[in-house]
Amino acid sequence: MTPEEFRRAGHQLIDWIVDYVEHVEERPVSSSVAPGDVLAALPTSPPTGVDSFDDVLADVDATIVPALTHWQHPRFFAYFPANSSYSSMLAELLSAGLGVNGMSWVTSPACTELEIRVVDWLGELLGLPARFASTGSGGGVIQGTASEATLVAILSARWRATAGAVNDDGDTSRLVAYITSQAHSSLEKGLRIAGIGTANTRIVAHDERFAMRPDALAAAVAADRAAGLVPFFVCSTRGTTSSMAFDPTPAIAEVARANDMWLHVDAAMAGIAALAPELRWVNDGLDGADSYCTNPHKWMGINFDCDVYWTADRAALLGALSILPEYLRSAAGASGAVDFRDWQIPLGRRFRSLKLWFGLRLDGIDTFRTRIREHVAVTQELAGWIADDPRFEIVAPHPLNLVCLRVADAAGGDAATERLVDEANATGTVLFTRTVLDDRPVLRVSVGGARTERRHVAEAWELVQSLVPAG
Ligand SMILES: *Cc1c(COP(=O)(O)O)cnc(C)c1O
Image 1 (tube, rainbow, N blue to C red):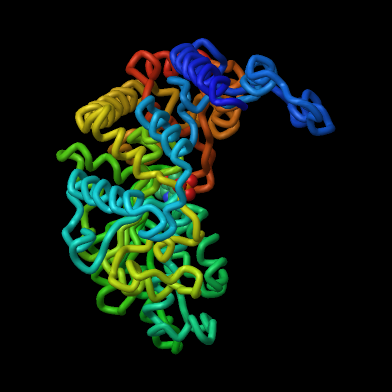
Image 2 (cartoon, rainbow, N blue to C red; image 1 turned 60 degrees about the vertical axis):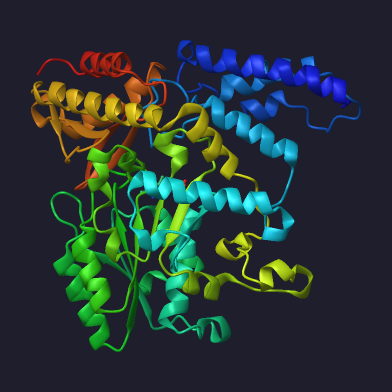
């Protein structure tokens, strides 16, 4: 591709993206292709010559777009959102254009120092405790995903609990971790990667609100200590994936402190709500946490991938992850410059802080606050509509932007709930995901799309009502 071709195609692609985003609402939310359809439409042999950009873009329209789930669709109520924004798309493009790898300070000082500054800004906007600020013994860093943040937390905890010995002997046999059945699957995966099998992972009981019971945690920890084991890690989830439950971080922190355990707080989805000061309760108890993460790439609308991970114990993080081969040694590193390669699993890293910088400057904090407030308000309104309809039951607390409902037994019960999810999704006008709470199927309505307005939620509710016959 020549520079002139790039210039032309670039303008063309920006126009294409704007048309896609502005008209995504006219498409079905999810695709109706069958497994293998996309493969069948793609040539089995690689291209031998060179195609024009017009040809490639035509194939995007013909083959790729019809086989997409449109995550930016305003009636996407599935999972949790993974929003996009024009400001972060520009930053992604700039990052690609600069093509730097920010693994060490010296490999691009601006990549490291912009990240330090914008992550500190975000911490201030969320009202995080000073212990996470880069000016003390903690600090924040952008990770690709909350799953990576969780793994980094577990590895830091493992290092601290063994006073670093694990780096030499790799012995994790006495370490025990504590989560609930509602914790994200990345906890189990991260523990597995870190050598903590299910035999040493305790599933702590939760209460009727799906939140961890601190008394059950304390009892499990005491039993393990009495058996000669070493409780080393507990995760408090603030906003669980199934039902948006909030584990009681302050009470969990007391147990963690009394037993020298690392407390990680996973607020991947809900933590960002604290951008609105009246919602800062979502992060209650962080004073007693060793690490915390939230995902600007969900509700805030910074393009995927952008999780921010903060730790209050930089020494444990670096103890667990820093390795300095000769070919990476530098004078700057030796004099104390931050090398973010030591704060993450991979070596290489993209210039992702541009996305937060552009978002905070070009969209502005009030855009994010307004979106969060509107979504919370319309979710509460939806909960009111559901509560007024005897065909449905709300099955979990709904303090933010997620409502979990099922069809009441008199109107068909569990089988009707399963059917409702399938039939609603089959219309193509909405996308919901199901979950299971207390062994019963549940329809989740997750309201977080950057383009989701009250009318979209009202349309979805009308559809749900139309699919369940009056009792
Ligand atoms: C979304 C989510 C995760 C996983 O996020 P990734 O960034 O995709 O790894 C983990 N925990 C919670 C509570 C989440 O909402």
